[in-house]
Amino acid sequence: MRRHGNGAPRILILGAGPTGLGAAQRLSELGHGDYLVLERNRYAGGLSASFVDPQGFTWDLGGHIQFSHYDHFDQVLGQAYGDGWIDHVRQSHVWLRERFVPYPFQYNLRHLPKSDLWRCVRGMIEADRNRDGTPGNFRDWILSSFGEGIAGLFLFPYNFKVWAHPLEMLSYGWVGERVAVLNLERALENIILERDDAAWGPNQTFRFPRRGGTGAIWRAVAGQIPGERLLYGAEVAGVDPGRRVVRLRDGREFRYDALISTLPLDALAEMSGRRDWMRPARRLSYSSTHVAGIGLEGRTPERLRGRNWMYFPEDNCPFYRVTVFSNYSPENVPDPGRHWSLMAEISESRHKAVDRDRVVEDTVRGLEATGLLPGGARVVSAWTCFLPRGYPVPTCDRDELLGELLPRLEEEGILSRGRFGAWKYEVANQDHCFMQGVEAADRLLLGTPETTVHDPQRVNSGGSRNERLRGASGQPAR
Image 1 (cartoon, rainbow, N blue to C red):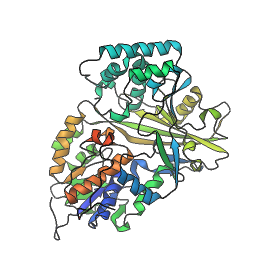
Image 2 (tube, rainbow, N blue to C red):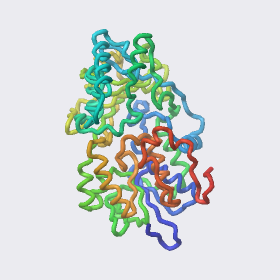
Image 3 (cartoon, rainbow, N blue to C red):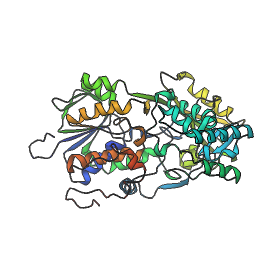
Image 4 (tube, one colour):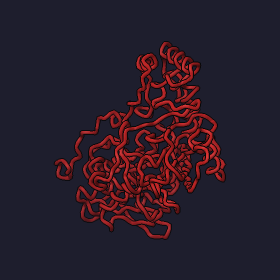
């Protein structure tokens, strides 16, 4: 790493989302003062920001919740946001065959019509008998893991709705804790004993800020970083890795010894002008996301009270997920006694077109078709947001492309981290992204290895939760 006069590296951080804020918070904690965060927006939070529409409804950029794999993440958010949390026990469901099936779907099949139930059971048994070999892609993995019934009824259509890519294009190494793998005995026992089984997963319990949506958390974290270390309205136009200079849209330039970039990896490669970076980066795949917030007059219908979010595999609606956002916090609506809200997410890609002019209309029709909007419900607010990059898609060649690209950047003093910086969906939650920034800072100052970006399976299995971060003196950080 190149260093200027006093031996301490000048560090630039591109983006004030969770990753950039994690890096900045850690650098300050370690007593390193020579860093600057460049953020193109006038606010912090990135894809975890929140907005209030003209009618007074609060909206997130998708269905964000807070749960964690890291003690350090919990400590920082606790210090920044205080005690303004609402705790929840997850109540998520799949809407299928005009009924709610508790999530995980495969452990709650008893709620299905008998013909569908038998189709799923028969498929599970056949898959269990015939499981051998290595699947070639995500579609094959689903079929060999769950059988034809669950695959055809739920997992195939739902996952295409989410990823907006043919499932044959996706790998399955990212799955980990993202999908509840099938235990045949457990699934059959739940059917026979007529028992609901919804306790799977790391987000069985979660929390949400009482006021301000998810973005309030990141505004609070940003508020703990010295103001002179955060530059808003700073849109990056170019990165010169040879000169180690970042150029802004307004012409200003900033020199660095080390760069932590949270920009989308493909965009960073284009900004660099380096063809050896651009070639692999252009082959990375992603989906876009439309978020549609529907604010409603009246009280939350009884059938939706207490529910968090719901999955929608069928084709009578455009969305793959809907969150009862007013259930996360009553402060998400202007008058909790008179309003409630639903937030829908719709994916788009070159493989899955969306009529952008009809997003609200199609969402409302889908909410009616799935019974989420009761007859006579009055819509008082319709808020939409288009995220050009919603999900980094784990295609079969993703790891090969990242293995070619990320080391080349690192040779030039650039650590590309975060949801689209590292392009690893399996470590793209808010806690993962924050800790990617923390670990990047530790690597630059302390020389410690990064766990999250390089060993996702270990992180997601709980292997790093109780590891203590070490300060510059080699003692545990406080």
